[in-house]
Image (cartoon, rainbow, N blue to C red; front, side, top):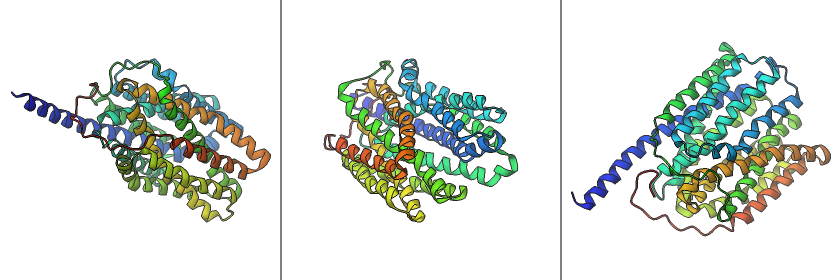
Amino acid sequence: MALGDVNMERMRAFTRRGSRDLRLLAMAAFCVWFGFGAYMATAVNFAVQLLDIQAYQQGIVESAREMPGFMMVLVAALTMRVSESLLGSFALILVALGMAAYYGIHSFTMLIVYSVVWSIGLHVWMTVQPSMVLNLSDAGNKGRRLGQIAAVQSLGTILGMSLVLLVGKAIGMRAIFLVAGFVIMLGAVAAAMISRNVGHQEKPRFVWKRKYSLYYVLTFLEGCRKQVFMTFAIFALVRNYGTGIQMVAILMIFNNLANIALAPKVGRLIDRIGERKVLAFCYSALIPVFIGYALVRHVHVLYVLYCLDSLFFLGSIGLNTYLHQITESRDLMPSLAMGVSMNHAAAVIVPVVGGLIWMKFGYQTTFFGGAAVVAISVLTVLRMKPHTPAEILEPVPAGGE
């Protein structure tokens, strides 16, 4: 057989296997976010109505839940010789068991314990999933694949929340967590069926390199921006404007529907014009969103601003594709783990600092601070190299050099 025929056969075999693995990965992502959507729609009511959790206890739970993300680089360092698909499957088993265990929670202590269990699994998955997507995607198509997976996740989230809306009262909140755990376990099975040689098999246990420093800074700033909105935007709507739980659910479902429609398009745009332009535009557009949240007093305008933040958040897909461009193959997953830790360093710091600023200077100052962080992000993004179109390379087996 001629060398050209051998190479062509290798290309076809890789394409067939890669397509199968991507479908399995999409199935796993759907299951995870279906379960997580059901959890998000139920968790606060469960904590307050069935466990009588007070505000300060809820803060402790949130802080404990974010700590695994902050420690992610250390967790990943212990598992860098494990196949990414097996590691992802094990992570989802932890998520499934941790969420299903909510069925039997009757105390504040157990709520913390099982919240940490599923959080460890989820944060490991948050590291493994984008690594597998990037390694399974063709050159010039990586942003599009990340966008497609993001859309699948949003669909899962919507359906999980819809489950709660449709049958939550009939089956009870505890049963919802059992259903969520079961569906996530199906995702663990799908992840276990992905090829073992996806990704570089000789990954270093720990990566901190100066040439990746721009990525580290951007992930930290992204974590700061995200936490300001995640922690305080809905809180401001509820506390200052009396927004009810149904409206909050409507806003979240709308955001996820918009993500389904737009995430693949944003991914394709990143592939075409590059991360620098997309991130610079999205961050620049977020500055007036934060300022508007501080100054506007009309609640319906604030609803629009909340949704715009979610839409512009899609630009963060470019952080992962940027990392893939600048890293060596063996550094990808540990560098993603470092990014998750940098992101969650912000998650540990920002809610406390933002809350203190809110108490002392008013909530407007908190959102002005968010605008300043986004402005710094714009300046940081401009340090990226201009986009050069990806070459159409011959596919090689996943994990190959």
